[in-house]
Image 1 (cartoon, rainbow, N blue to C red):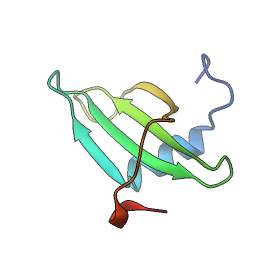
Image 2: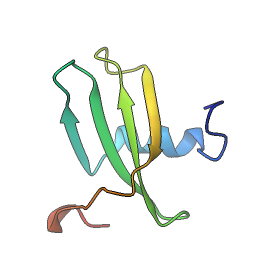
Image 3: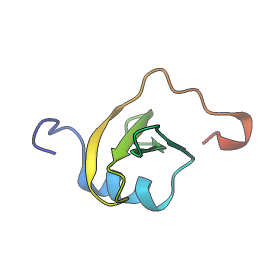
Image 4: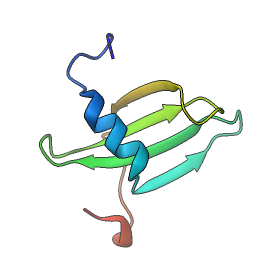
Length: 71
């Protein structure tokens, strides 16, 4: 992720395979959330409707996991 060099590709790849929460946006993009233990933060990755191409990725400070989704 050239725009966000602090994000590691392995975090994104792991999150896409093991999300703790997902949502489909009205435009077909899919949001995935996961916890990055080394950063003690939740990462949101948004992929294109094809389910593979990463559109955006960032630490989501507003994400609050539900009880069953907690780390």
